[in-house]
Length: 137
Image (tube, rainbow, N blue to C red; front, top):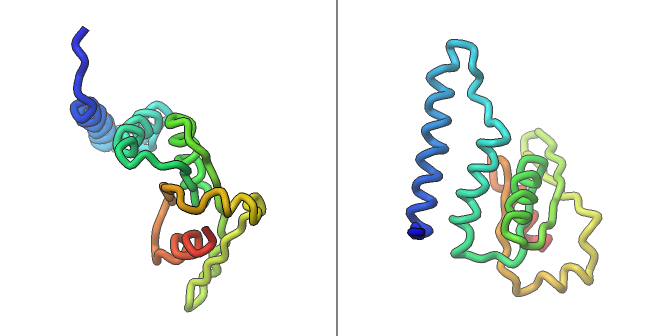
């Protein structure tokens, strides 16, 4: 059996993913919604696993609901530790972001120092959540 190089596998998976997304977009006027299915999500995670394997993080951190789902799935596929943060955003003139995490104790913080961390967030608007998580870690 011929083994394909990892870079080629990632490119093929990416092309398959883009093909599915493009077809769904063109079919949306006919009632087929371009929402991401779980199969497409799993395909996208496989692409992320291959892309992230060079970095080889020790811990994968998810921010917010969307970031936590993606990070947990990626961590499970890569057999890595997973940590999740929730946040509260106050939409005022300063856009205050508060990070909530009851699961990280002082002892756990010491265990993550010096580790390579992959931070995943579902959306980035101002970067304030990312800065707060990085400061917390």
